[in-house]
Every structure is written in C-alpha cells, then in structure tokens.
Image 1 (cartoon, rainbow, N blue to C red):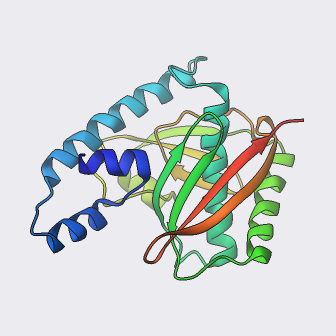
Image 2: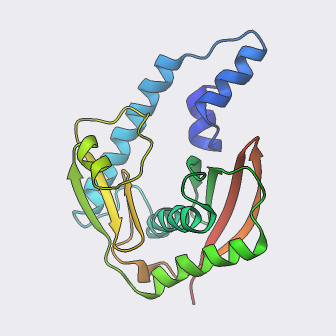
Length: 206
C-alpha cells in the first residue's frame, strides 16, 4: 500500500508514515509521494475549474456541499480551540459524510463541539456566497488564506472564501452559497493518532 494511498484514503500524514516505516527499518518514497500528490492536485484543480464553469466534473452536489462544510468546520475549530494549535492533518469526503483530522492535544469537549456546530450552522443560515480567486502562493499567504504551505503547489492556486468565516487554498469543488448545505451535525469525535483528533460530520437536509 503506497504512502499516498494512506494519505488520500485514510488521511494518514506522510510524516507519520515515514516515522512508522523508520521504526521497522523501511523507507518511504518521498519523491513518489510528491509526484502522486501533484497529480492528484492537478485533477482537483481541473475539477474546480469545471465547477465554476457551471458543472461539477465527476463530483456530486452533495460532495461539493460537504467539501464546503469541511472548510467551515476547520474555521470553527480554529476559533473555538485556539487557531495556533489546530492544523489540518487529513480529510476524506464520501457522498454521505465528511471526515476531518486535525492537530490538537486532547479530546474536544461536548461543549466545544456544540460551539463548533453553532458557528458552522450560523454561516449556513446566512446563505453567504462563496467566492473563488486565483493567485500565487505568496499572495494567498499574504491574504490570510490557510493551506498546507509545506506542500508543492503550482505557480497559481485557487483560494475559496466564505466572507467572515473561512479563506483557504483548495482545488474545489464547492457549493455556490452556504445556504445550500443544510444543517451541519457532528456525529463523532475521536483520536486518530498521537496528537491528532478526528471528526466525522454530516449534512442534514429538510
């Protein structure tokens, strides 16, 4: 099983794969991982371009909504838990739910989860238009966008913004307005690995 498959399918960070491999006297093909990541990113960017031309490429509408919800979830976590401690470590989206892994040293309390849910649902209730801009990585960083800056981005990146809530480098696709998402509900919070927590959440439509 490749390191990229572990990352893409299970949200397993490459650094952790390298650490576990080293403990067993094995090595990880970092160059191969970078190439696979770049190829995946190019496919994502192509999907994003089609999304904003009126189509969703090979993605369903629900997948796009869950993708947008993931951005709102990360923004809410950074606000509730302290942005200096929260960083994305992996994510996975199916047609039914989203899964988000993030760095945090302890279990998130029920009260904190409720606060996170409330922030996300407030953004949804406001039915905010989601915008997409193309810029350089440096411009994105200077604009306050968050992203995996240690990753190898191309010369231009897409920055998706939910005004007042979230601004991230991302390949898309996304909903056009937050009001399309429905009600956001966290179903589970658990440990993913040492220092990494995992949240599974769904969107409920009336």
